Length: 241
Image (cartoon, rainbow, N blue to C red; front, side, top):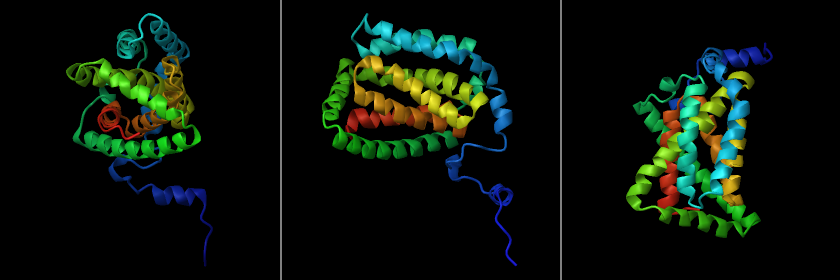
């Protein structure tokens, strides 16, 4: 005699199924409440942190047209502020591991492929976006190769602290992980508006959501940094889009 498959039975059946390398699409886990409870004290700062970060990046745009110096200067202010004011388990979030390295590399491969598909759709819908992407590629030449190899990973790490850590984890602690990822992506996209490249804003929203999801899923900013740096390198060197 058959029995109905209820929600409770589905949960019971899936409880023992482990995601491969921790990269299943499910954001909720049994330890979610306990983990995010350690992040909840940071949520109160999001209301002022995001407007401040966006305003600072916009203000610096009026002082220098050099995009990398602008981002570096903004992060020199924002990162210490986030680390001091937003109470998160920062050491745990940044703990490196071989597992995290593998996860980051795999996630970068997925993001590169997804970005290529997304760029083809964007170019088909908005052909002028190709010129905007070409303008972004020209930014790579604003720095000597050696300086770029040092500065770009530092900027990426700073962005994980601000947009993924202080925003995504803090919001997720109060509203849930999907809202955390969405809020982080929206704030990250708005921060890119001042750069004047609409295609970059779209890319920031998509990649920002992916990186926030990845961080929340793996409980690690180290994984996100590996993915972010590898993706940046592929985009800058291979010019896939």
